[in-house]
Image: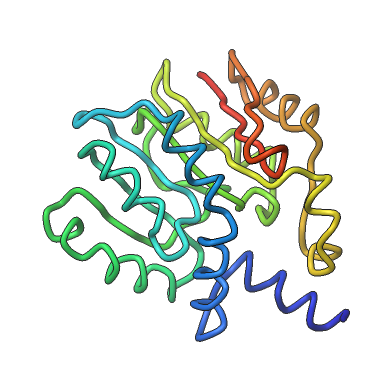
Length: 204
């Protein structure tokens, strides 16, 4: 299972090709409780400027904009996912409500205080520099902004064979420590789906 596990882990971190499309479809279904958790918690309005890190096939963007029209920018390291998400949300892209582009959260191209909200789901395990990534998110958030980080709990990640390599796993205490180091003033953790996942909410 070693090579297969490594390959699946790499597809989770950087979906590409036909397998990448299948993986993102499967992850959408498996992580429904996490999408629901973000949508229930997120506070947005038509004036909100939102950044989504690692949008995959753009499924979360559809859910967000159905809750409220807003301005959504998505970054992802996968060229295939940029194309897929743009196509899947073409009417919102055409209207100017959404924009998808290549990008790395550890080196964001945006100016300080550019966004009201930042979201990400199941991406933090793959960041090249976790502390820098969270610091960059804090930098581009406005004062009073919120970062919603949805993850599978470490206890559940440990149950999957393909997470043995290529995943950085964090405890609740480590998520809190990372946020404090990045300068977030308020941090709370919400359990999702009978402890399957966690929503870490960082308030600037």
